[in-house]
Length: 79
Length: 156
Image 1 (cartoon, rainbow over the protein chains, first blue to last red):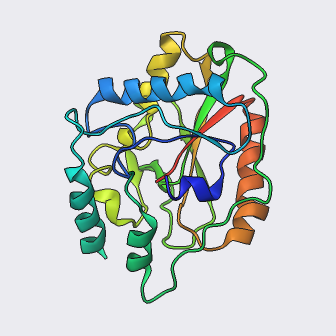
Image 2 (image 1 turned 180 degrees about the horizontal axis):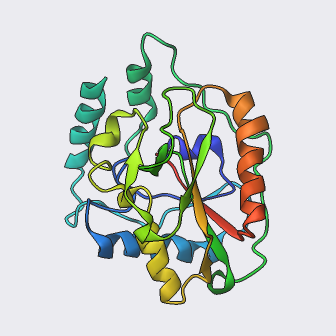
């Protein structure tokens, strides 16, 4: 969201998943399709350039945000 | 509160200065001219991915792009992007490039039709002027040539 709000694409849908896993965990075709369908459904709701829609995607079914620490470690470790 | 990526990217970019995010002075906007169920859709990805037989992208400032068949059976996808987040999407590129999911929603009638190909380029480039003046117009021209109504960019 911090990047998206600064680069102002014409229409943006925020997917609150780890970066690089936008459409879900590997090999989960049902989830890939669910995210895509939900994002496309937002198209009709854009009324102005630069709008961001947040459909409320969450990575973990229980709402845990433990993935943030794991991802941060992964990104910094790689460097 | 969503995860903030900019501080992580700033730490990763050292000793180079953090990347500067550039926004257009005015966000572009084209009204939808057709409903989704009659629109032709293409994917755009900044993952620097390609079909295995295509020429590899060259990290880190490659301004080229690849046409990638929208047919999920067209062959395996290779991700050339150097980002540290690549370990997982390299196991299954569909999670950043939902070629199969898009083909499925076309079959279901949610989306009108697939563009014959999707387009891939390298994200994270620092050559903003060249992106704006060369890469973006070239991609826009390709999309127009394929009569694409709607382009869905998946950032990487």
